[in-house]
Length: 362
Image (tube, rainbow, N blue to C red; front, side, top):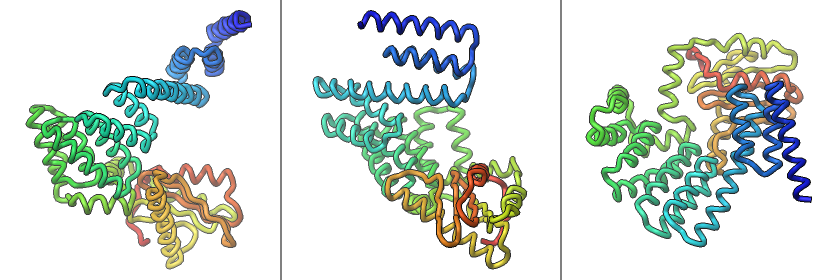
């Protein structure tokens, strides 16, 4: 039976390859990839998917298949690594497992793995890996406690490897992101001593020097990130994008607000808010209320370790208030009844566009 199944599998693969040769399309690439996956050849299945994505970039079916195959491959390798570590642990295996978990966004498991490596061996490389994982976890979480943990692990790594450029690059990244510019400049100065003449580092030094007037202490910076969910360098990039792209969101808000049953359409970015529908004091109250909901949602999500929120929906006698949040901004629709699929799609387009706004009351 095994021989028959293998023969049938190879026959289907030949047929799938012929269909792909005759008519290259996302569907025929996906069909051949699935045949290899069913045969247990995940590596070839992924290769076919990636070839298809080069010909048809962004195709959702091929991208979904590729992601699934990569995820399956990572889980298979993780099981192999667990077995190898039980039998004969060595640093390379710990490092690979930590990297795989980190790459697959399993931050808690990655931190546990790096901590177990450190507890088991006490290696400097284990401390460096733990610092790296804690840094990535903070960047994903944006919570104060995660930030303090990242600082603590980086300090310990710095004590073990005071002139290691990897530690300094991590410190530079962390301090720049939160707005502790003076500390970022200290790390960068040491990096330039280790890597003199590096044009990227020199350019970074000039940029940070120009921002030094806005520097905060590390404690202040972490509190601000925890409160807003926004990194200092996010805000800088948003201002730079705003100076280059003056997209006005008002026409879209007006279009939404003019629809039957819509009470308000709101766009938030930083301290600014644009409201269509209600006017005067009512518009200000609506903007403040939506901003509080977004901030509360972001803060609660971080404290529960859920990462960044994408959307919030409130339903009641008032109808539906639906919000979607981007990295720097948020959009909201308040309407009677439930939010329709069409309005949900419009809301998705509204959040995350980082439109330019003029300062308004909120």
